[in-house]
Amino acid sequence: MTERAFTSDRSHNAALFGPLSEILTGILPEEIGLVLVGSGPGSYGGTRVGLAAAQGVALAGACPVVAVPSVIAAPSAAEGSCLLVGDARRGSYWTAAVKEGQLEREPELTDEAGFREQVESAPVVVSFEDGSKVKFPTTRVISYELPTAHLLWQAWGKAGADVRARWSQEAAQPHYLRPPHITESKRAWPVTK
Image (cartoon, rainbow, N blue to C red):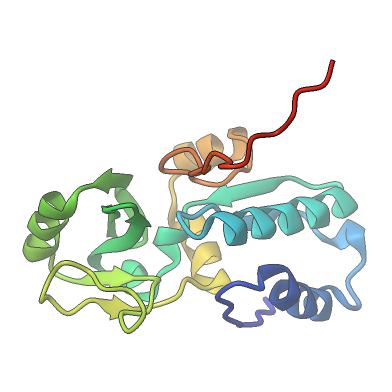
């Protein structure tokens, strides 16, 4: 397996396609049998760009694309039990429980009090967000880790046949915790008939 690592705060499309192109160089489309992609939770734009790229590769290879929860591809998730957390904005947070690369509890939204309660009782707490950029409402140490393609494939391999079948049957789409926040325009637009 070939893997390229990169990080990006905002320019997902600019950062993704260079490494993707490198990986696909020299591979014939018919050599691709399955495309796995992380479904999040993650940034609204980044998750959608990653899924769209995966669907494009799968379309070219005439093979299935399967979305797998990104939280199971964190290094600590592959090694043991951990709580993955993230800032869901607007005063809420998301949490997901993982044990040995498998979901114990799907990502869900919680408020500040629920966040603190879960974080204090977890053996290890991990976030995909850099703690120097995001302030979580706890004094507990939260490890900053990023999911990897290798660990996504590893979790796919460890998953039972029933879990793989469920993931394969679901449409490859982002794991949204809530609908996108849309701010109403303050400008009055003329209505034409």
